[in-house]
Image: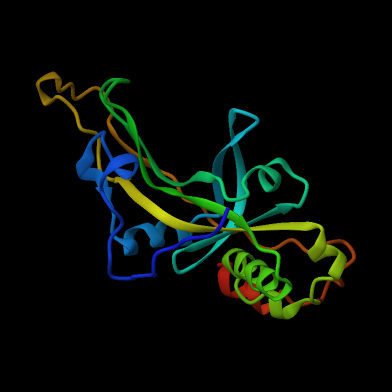
Length: 226
């Protein structure tokens, strides 16, 4: 299938219609690119949905973003890499910020930031473009590491499937704050509130083959606290 895409318009929000419209608690939805991209840039794993042999499939994949393009990678012969050539895909990235503990199970929830993306996935075949896409994925995970290590071997590049997903539509949805309770049922003996959930990077653990006095590389020192 031939590629088609609209020009990248950084100030233009995504459409709030059709499959992209947030229906449940619509006030939590956002369609501006700043909100969508901020969540994508904080995530590590995208759950990618596609159709394989007539059945829906969801697979978690690491990714990278460049403007309105997402790059996905995996083994060239994997199901995700062989089923998505020019086909529609959806992907979701979710950040959990807290467990919301209400006065009842019904009133309990989660604080979260999530993005759902719709687009089509196309394989990247040209070698230079594949390298740039893989660098984008690497920089998303640990900025600066690409320049600290050897370049990928040709056999590694050939065995890696790389796909580009141009974001055709995307929406963010965010919940924040305390429980939304029926205060007519207020019971001071019942604890309510929020349990924060945080994702942090721990202190790097060197492989046994690394000398004990070897310093942590700069790329990791920049992103790891403590």
